[in-house]
Length: 76
Length: 142
Image (cartoon, rainbow over all chains, first blue to last red; front, top):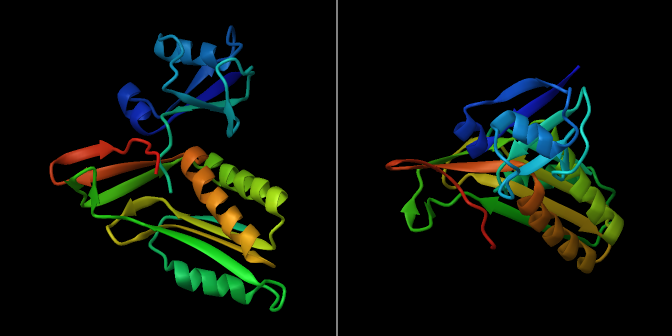
């Protein structure tokens, strides 16, 4: 089973990636998913969500989850 | 309570009136509203248009959570939130927040709370089209 990863706004453009499926094997936390995706350590500039709810880098993930990364929001 | 994302221009005042028609007359003594509209300038630059990207699925949920939090805190009668996504032109309304309550205090306070929480938490991102190129808007304090 996989974890679906989605990216938005300037982060999507920088990584040139809209969404991707990663094998959940070896991925325990949000920060693990970020590291697997980008090869970079966790960045405080990045916001994360798991299953459409805000998450922390240490939030646990499992197969079937949707994990999203995005920059600070600018709606309203 | 209603939370809606719209990909096309809308008239916030017509939406507010239509929604209020459905509420029971006599229940509410106050309605506070906020309408955010697109400017044609930002940070000293002319802005020709804007694209509002969002996270389908989470945007609606986060808006709903914010309205739920406000409702739990102020116990108002009803609330309507409409937010644009997609291509927006200067002068177009971007967001409507309206709160109905028996008295003015909860209506004012809940409306302000919803607007501020929306700007801080809802996954929406503005990309501006300038005469020379495009840029992502950075979060501001006001």
